[in-house]
Length: 331
Image (cartoon, rainbow, N blue to C red):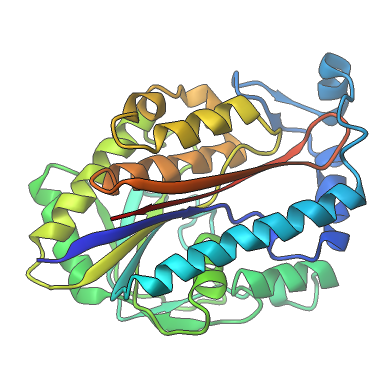
């Protein structure tokens, strides 16, 4: 049977693709964002956030702090890449959110598995109409041009059939007509670019809709589907060694450190209640990517949690930014 032998989780913030000197661009976006999401479900402007909270982070939202945080984050990503390559993996199952890159808003499945022979990324961030810093971000996301790498067709089909047997209503996709119009996005390209280290490892993409209500699953359902994914992998007659990787998160675009630390604590086997009880109002906008971590925790629940790392990156005085996290489950 196939077996999940490794679990990883990684944030995929644009900050992780850019030199720290370019982080100011994301801070500028926060100042103009009219829908900064709070964990109680409210959406506010920066001015409203500052009026409510003040600006207590002015002393740490500085270029010097950005540089130090960047070094620590890249070390965390290196540590994940080391674990991936040490485990001699045959297939990487990436659980990530699609943000209109492959699926349009006219037809957005709650969850879908891709079972094509080849994965192709969309090139939207490499185009001439984008500024240079976005082009650089596009390289880190493998969205600067159309990149192609192998899928895991046979195992993906086995997993789809296994989920159906377990009463999980699953969408599926088998090919990409024109990746310049609709292709794989940042959640998947980032993992291949940053963790694969140039190796050609077949990828089994699990695409979640986390961003676009109303068909967003609950935290409890995400964990249960993760457990079903593990069982479906084990049903496969393949002898593949599989890594399951969560891509995205943690809290953003207003950093919520207590929420992030709750997620990290909940990753350990036996602590699932800390994940499955996270309410929907805490999982809006960028923070919705925590669902990718919760599903991965369900899939990796049979493995010990080896380590976690966390960097709350605050990039404006009022506390906007991103909670950057990394995790590894391994026997």
